[in-house]
Amino acid sequence: MSSDNKKKLSFATRAVHAGYDSANNEGSLNPPIYMTSTYAFDNVAQGAARFAGEEKGHFYSRISNPTQEILETRLANLEEGEAALATASGMGAITATLWTLVAPGDQVLVDKTLYGCTFSFMEHGLKKFGVDICYADFTDPTEVARNLTDKTKVVYFETPVNPNMRVIDIPVVSSLVKAYNPDIKVMVDNTYCTPALQRPLTMGADLVVHSATKYLGGHGDLIAGAVVGDAETIQQIRLFGLKDMTGAVISPMTVFLILRGIKTLQLRMERHCQNAQAIAEMLDAHPAVDKVFFPGLKNDPWHAVAAKQMDAFGGMMALELKGGYEAGVRMLNKLKLAKLAVSLGDAETLIEHPASMTHGVYTSEERGEHGISEGLVRISAGLEAVEDIIADLEQALVG
Image (cartoon, rainbow, N blue to C red; front, side, top):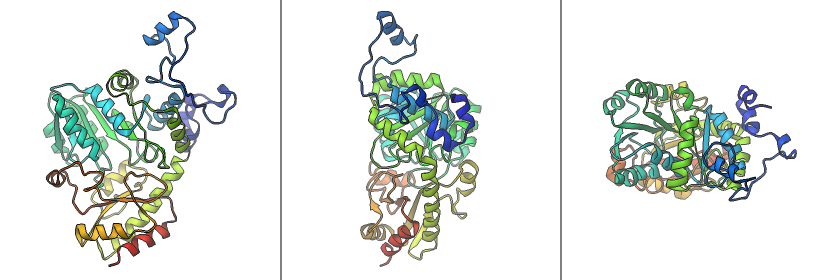
């Protein structure tokens, strides 16, 4: 079946089949794992043509690999982009992309709240090499507009935002940026949603990045990343940001595991979303809880935006307890079923304290400026029976 026909199929079907035909691979139902670093050429002319990009084909696995190509084709299909590049980590995807797109003197306009390592790269990586990093509240379009300049090359944000669950209107920000300068790249971290719930490229964004470690892999057994966008830009990132700048090359075995995970992505996301909704509603009504941050709650300030651009409200949430930081620590230390661990998107329910863990690279002053409170607790709803997750949280909230 051709890739064009597969685009017309449902998401769940494409997640299983896109980019791979068993008939071309000895009938193997699963893609072969090409454990090779290099590739033999028929002659010198073929080798030269492949190195020059004049002939399609693999020549060194730091650039491409047949197993990796299947994953990249599938991710591009699911995100509705032209091409994709798989990398060794989510940070590998982010850094390879930004090193490719910006130079000293350029500006990157960034939402005020970012995953801790992304923030650290902006502050200690790009800034160190003369790139201006400008922060703005992307939930306020006037702030985005006010900070765009003739030096802006990339506009970067997550939505929903890690860890405080703000939701940024992708079509509004994208159209505003493109009206100012169509050459500015709009780059969205879609890790929290995956293409099962949200497809930023269909809403005006140019590039989507993922930590495939999370929901795409889905089982907490790998580290990987990806970037999806137009074919020309992805090729530039592959040949410069990946090949020359970061070397963030993904392992073929890791690719195989992600392909296996993606086959059940829609089913898993449905369960993550269902569990998260029930957990958030319980927490929202609990007397020990001060506030729940989850766009699936109708009283959440970002509910309307999320309902417009997301197919469901995701498996992530955050909360603050009435007893503040100390109460949060007590709750976390009393958990029995949920795991006190960073990362997200695993089968297990994971809970962490951003200020001391995933966002600990921020100073306390920076966390205040960027909307990350000291008492915030982040929850990744797992795939366990929701009544068991709720019972664990309820016992941990007592006392």
